[in-house]
Image (cartoon, rainbow, N blue to C red):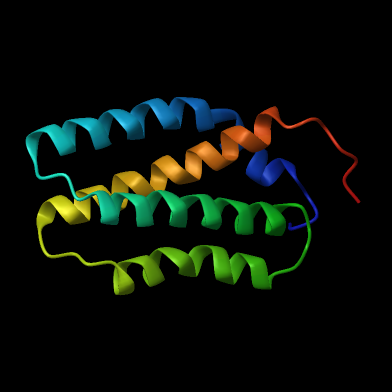
Length: 115
């Protein structure tokens, strides 16, 4: 399954819509709740890193990338300060925002041969 790039390609094609949806959730949550910029920054960065790691798995670089990619959200929850519900909303919406941004960037990169 890891040798089939179309597994993750369906997510890559839906990523621009995901950016709109998760950005809307993040904006509404930060207007109605407290803005925690540190948590939001950690979440966006963590989501982008997780997407890059999972793309390596989808492109056939090895199963360890799958384990690292799906473990990163747990690491974020463990090491991000979550003192309020607003911080948790920022963490979840920011993670998916970063994930979708990384996938969208990948979508618009020039096509290269996959080996």
